[in-house]
Image (cartoon, rainbow, N blue to C red):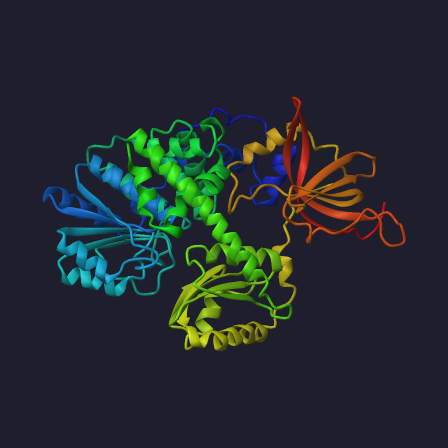
Length: 561
């Protein structure tokens, strides 16, 4: 897959945005804008243990052994599962899939599942998006005569489990040139390696898997640079021509045309609907949708997932409203606890609490004996470190800087809550909300460059996502002409600004009337000037396209012009 636009002139503002992100030479900028799939495809055998993994799978083929792909209930795990399931069958292998239940089994390998798979005749388990920390489970598999190949991208410890192979780009001994692959990306590398030694999937035909790889990559919020960028950019092109009845049906029920899909479609349309199954019921429904080749069944499953997603939003919103009332103004960490709140959505609620109150947040679902919680954080306060600090209080917990999960006995909630607040205080952190402020890519003096042509130029930077955010434009000193509350729920606000030349520009803040409160005039009836940061978007009306802004940040300007 190669672009036709390698010699296209790069617009000055696009070049400036790329330079602000460390991509400074003309060659590097062209490579970023038009990533070549073959050029960006790193040698899969540079992943440590890849040769061992390929050798063991070839043995399974020779001996007609049963393989089970052990997945996960999130998008990354589901897409990785189908990537392997579909491809290994083409290589002639006997393959089944297993997805643990979020509520009864939790994340990753568990001993009961390993024993069940062994009893059912599985001789080789291949994990996707998990397994790096499954020491006891892999040891038990070996005792039962079952080999395990781990494909994962989570941070390993110094010691690795006793698997046949551990394919993980984050291994300390790895020689792979890019360590931010998603779980589906690692599974895809295994397929690329197998292509070199097995028949059934000719070179180039693996590109039809890129729709799944793109979805898992975007939804797991890994960096959209390097190999990920190429996989997602071309994966979106594959999605527009997808052969998968399930994806076609899911887009149809969401009223999205194939020709209009972009990275936001993956993250905000397909992703939530597929995730809804594992959050409220079982991920098997979503997995079946991705695997089916039956159009009627695909539509039936897509409609069920769409209904589940609506239910998920309703449950999530109810918990969010209840949780918001519990946040204590003086607590540096926002903590909310509810009886039997749905475990499948408390992580999303924690993220919304963080956004609203601009503080690290934990949302806990209290049961009769045990309480489960999910946390979200930012800046210099790490969820993982906080949970480690309270390890003697909780039953188990872990995560990384931005997110974490925990289980504790219900009678210890207040003790844990106090320990978390004390731990935050001991860090003596300053100005943490600055980490939530958007970082501008370009500072403009006026609105003259905000044309529909600029929107077309910015599209060259797509796909947008983690590691390649939508460009942020800053205007350091504009006049506030008007502020208007809008929306059926009166929860959106539209601002009108003017620059020093008198040109006008409007920007909207969605669900943020409490965040953006500056008025056109202060108490003394003086005109107010502001520093404004926006993302640009198109407003089409009666065939005319106008450039508007999505308001990200605003404060009073240091001086008036």
